[in-house]
Image 1 (cartoon, rainbow, N blue to C red):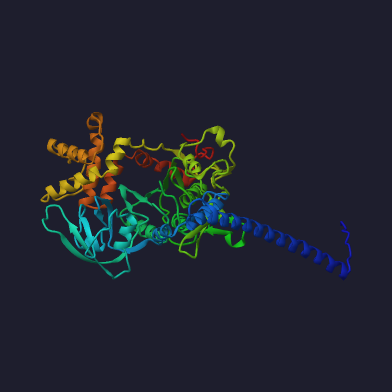
Image 2 (cartoon, rainbow, N blue to C red):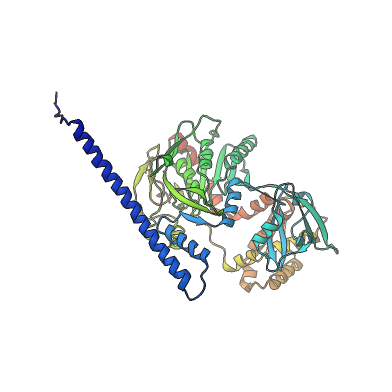
Length: 541
């Protein structure tokens, strides 16, 4: 048996040692305080000199905000200061509702033009329609150079309060006046959930707000009742949101008592492990998760766990690469500080945060995520490697790399983008519906097979393009007709049937989505353990 030598110290020696250690700790604390105080004194000197000697009178609010932004830029790209108005919009998005009348709008020629009333809202129930022009609010003309923030202030307000609007409507000679009672308007995080083909349910999550888990549970229950056997979960362009809701989404898809994600930070309260519960699951069939370069944060938590646990296939292009957790801290003036307090790790132990230290500014860091659909083998060789539950290789340090690469659809041409942003197709569709009031519109009537434009219709579209001053070359008129007709069909579906039918038309030529629908047999093999473990994520091209 080995023996250990024990040194014996008297009580006085112990006390002296403890005092010495405490002294060193106190000295370090005091030194740190003195260093911070001296730096704050330096900042105060600079601020004082600028305030009193600069050639023009400085804006103190801008000076302080600039100082805050400059300070936070020395940290990570996701620690940011959020001004008050933007913080209010953020609260609405994460809370999943606001109080107002329920319209999508744009400002045109000094009026609030209704793009679409939201189904079930006060505006929808009163018969306000696409194309209506709001010219007065509470019997007062709209402010000159009205902005979106002005519209929010005018139309939003406490639930139950009244707002009066005056509307000019096409084919109606006199202005219409409505008194609208404001109500809670839900901001959906799952705007589209339907059976995309027999046996396959489709769910599009656009953000992770406080209601996302609840919305998903309702959507899955409805789809199961309609015969869903497999699930396509679309997380493209979803920049994230609440960690708790990412966990809730996973908890509905992953068997009980599985590690879903864990966080680690400098302070103990930022450390947590999140595991799946024994709640009712959707476990009967395979899952395919569709991601792209805009899928970040909570989207990567979901897709990373699905991949690590071999619960389903992750397909598309590599995600953004944000592995940091922010706490939202409310400041005294109503603004917020989004402060990074932890890093999160997928079940296999991956930190998927991209390196941000090599970029000169945050814009460059953001843009880099969209440049490469999938890293080369030489790049993958430099990244830390991990194993999924079934033994497949996955990689950290650069987002979630898909199991199957599906390239992004080609971007819109500049002309196509200009036509959409100038609401050319929306205006044509709005006029067309007014001109065909006797038509009973249905998905079948608006299908590509049944809906066609006549020559007079094309002439009217050209007139709208000319009036909106959008330059459209002859080659576009010749070659882009299928695109134009699909956009018109989508806007007419929005006007007559609803946003879901509009979306169904727009994704008809979505090659990423259509290709992903063919991958459920492979996802089934993965669930059953029959997929080759040597198949690395990001290497199946």
